Image: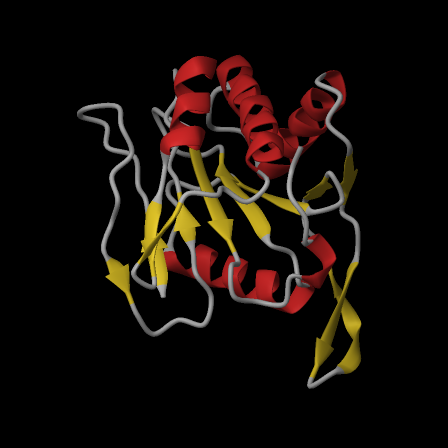
Length: 194
């Protein structure tokens, strides 16, 4: 089941999108626009809810941590804007995460397996924050379904429960999509945020 919760630019509130069946992982996607104030973003994270399997899902996976990471990305976008290569954005985000005291590892190799057999190939996300959230950066005109499919596959393969997909190439706003794996193997990230 895919759950889409895109941002409505008209009224500033999140809209609950339609449930679409047929996927093994539930995606909860949020869009954050440039100029969102901290209080509005926090209210957005706390009030967003989606219908999942007939029941309302009001728990946001790692909401406090993802809020802080999103804030750091928004600060980089406010400072630099769009039009830079992904490598420049990655370096700026690393500096901002450090300045804000957010624990992270850059390009941490994560093990992959196939039918419970380990692969020699490793997946290297841009950042792993708080040892449980994958932060993937892009610098493209707009995020595509291929980007989202890649996120879904890596969430399932690594067992992480949350991945933030951030696009610094979009104008006039930063694109942030919060994608949660609510059905995959999440043994590495079980627990609640404080």
